[in-house]
Image (cartoon, rainbow, N blue to C red; front, side, top):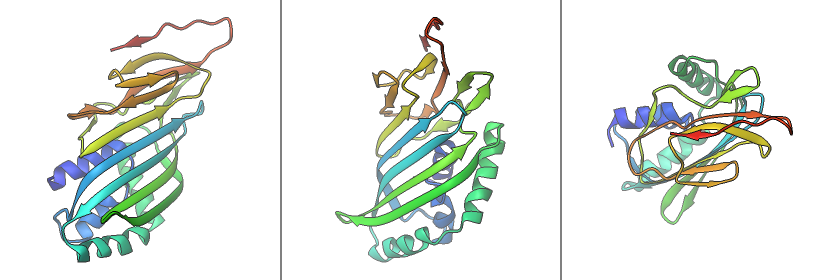
Length: 201
């Protein structure tokens, strides 16, 4: 996987925020392969969201793996804020990380990384309508990938693009096999007597 591919992957998903920083820190070539990647994005009506990412990284070099583990956990909050400043420019709205937690562990010979980030401005808010779109940014698929989007239980979905692989009420799941645009889901909270039609492109 090229450095450009990894960079695009990280910018678009707004998760795995510090991989790029450590990627360059470790010498300019990716020392790992992303074997498994799952991102769960849980939105509220204020446009904020909690992004939880779990990934398994395979390293051929044990020394590189230990280097990566040590440096990942110590990356600064200042670097994280700077990263999201760049992401905000990419998507045209301010996205601010208000809370960030990370754990790194060894799992079956692979490095397992779990990140949880609370993001202000993760969705665009227009009146009472929210849009999760991030423009034309495209997700490059690493290994086994699953993208899960959780909307409020009482939300009415107006439109979804691309069509999810699976849907259970307001839980949408994508398992892309090729590059996919970041999901654009438009939804709103409606009153009991209000009806909104849904479209899926």
